[in-house]
Length: 326
Image 1 (cartoon, rainbow, N blue to C red):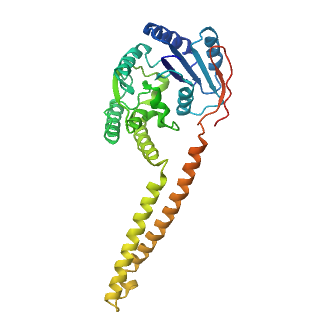
Image 2: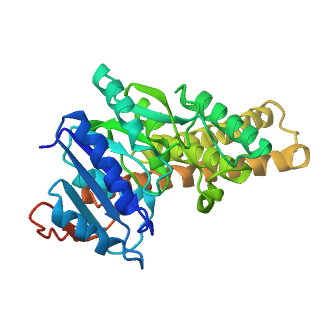
Image 3: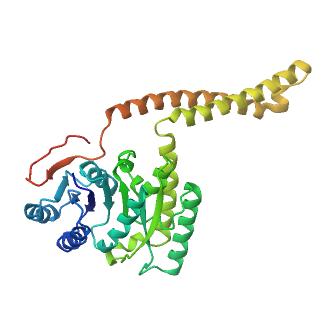
């Protein structure tokens, strides 16, 4: 079993694959530890798999996971994590914007005892002043919301202990916030400086729009992960609060009517009475919906379905491992 697994999701970066492989090979061989390189092909209409197949045929440490279609970066990472066998997992982009020579810095922090090491981009070429300010604001807000003192939540160059990533469900955009979410489960997190080059094709990764997408995505992800496995805690709580509020208003008006038989409730507080009735009905509906979602969450958990479908896996002897999960 290798000590380290380098997971690289690929989406049309076939012109960079050979160069990336050579750089990773040099850096990881210099560590003197066993390792494997896990390349995940998203199944797009590129010649990525053909090039990876050639590399895997000459290097037994290369693992190629070909997905049946493009499921997105989060699902590609989930597939890479599931097929990685190393005690430590390092994730980086496949477009050469991350420098493999920074990997030893991550490894030193992991050996100290940290569960997650996240990269912090120091040199951000191509950032406009307004985009840089909005990014700093978004990162500051995410740090306050998560309680994790990171300065760059958008960095995808990270390292983890294997058991950390295995404990988190990866779907949608969750992979962008692994450090913050894992910290909620007790994982220790630190940050290291990395050299990053913003490619021309990655202009969409910077700017105000991206910063706020990251912020809103983190809020939604944190919200979903907190209540995804126990929706009744949220919907049931709201339902009970609504029923108690509506019932309280109704009880107060009933007491007023008893104490003052001549008091015309509809004339004096007609809208308030209707509002109280709506609150009670809405509370009952939320409570029932919470029970239904609780049963759905239990069913979904029992199914344990992966958010991807693997078409082919290449390892040392180029054997196939078909997977039918989706």
